[in-house]
Image (cartoon, rainbow, N blue to C red; front, side, top):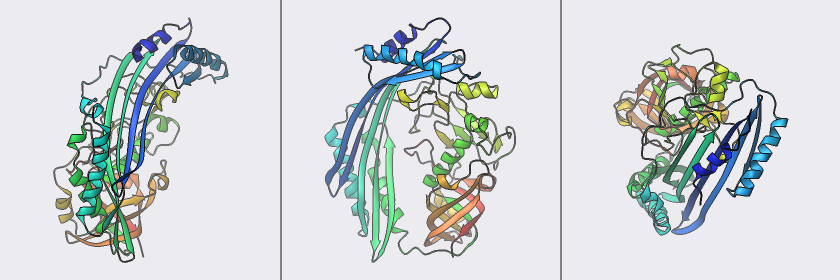
Length: 447
């Protein structure tokens, strides 16, 4: 079987004079297991492969793809991409990425232990996680316990001189819980991530899932007032996901970013240093290549509160008059022209635990969960309002559980009002890591 690099090299070798050609090929697979009451309720193991080809001529782009790597199908895809050029809209910025001299950062993204991990042991992990969560508290039952993993290898070649390949795999376990006390039912969750299933912390995942559910039992609607909020790491990661979309050069160009025209300005508390770092192997979405085959790299977007840069693909960079930051993202071989986006967001952590942060709050609330955050944020104005649940904080101590309230502010105000960043980094199965975050003067609307 031909390597992916050989396949894309052959495609690019067929380029005609006057056209740019990019070939992107991938193979991958995933396993998804769900356990309920000690039995496997859901099991999927799937693999896929395919190729996408872009052809650019005189500012027009044609794209085609196929879910196979059969040679005859690839020839058809190239022919179709060429035909589709005629239907493309002329774009003066159209073009492929070009080598920029940045080499990929060496990192371990592939685990042989995960590749060789037996299916039976994957099922056992989900069953053990369910058992531990139930054992954590007599009021807890498990809604579902899951094991998931995935692997992929890609190769890209272009007539502009890019020729790169890479592979990676990762896995996670998660558990959803229900805590019941009479007619009161609350939900919780816990998870563990990594590239070696033997290193999963099932005890921690089960304990967190039970705690998140049980400590909200008896929750009431709080009074409306301005408070200091402490965001749980999982909630902080959700906010970072929203903020990351506004730091895309593509969003700025389209007028969909609250940070447009603010490069070099102070946009956050001096405690905020926000980094997109896919070269950190602890990040669940760590990678060595972006979607165009350029080296992924560490980009400091906000440094000590000051907006340093946006993230760019080669296309958004050309439109903005700057250089790619190695942040092209694409939806696999069928993704067409890559967009620009953050790959692995992280806040530079502080030094103190969540408990230590809470000890300094006289009147506040620990936000444990938010609902509808992405739909509740305006990426242009920064206004947001989201449903939340959590625990009141009084004189440095955790108090009564609260729910059915909203927190509202603007992303700009929230970033400026950060008074401490926790040191409790939580590596999550998402494009953003979490830490506890303390923010002053947030409106809590309840009764």
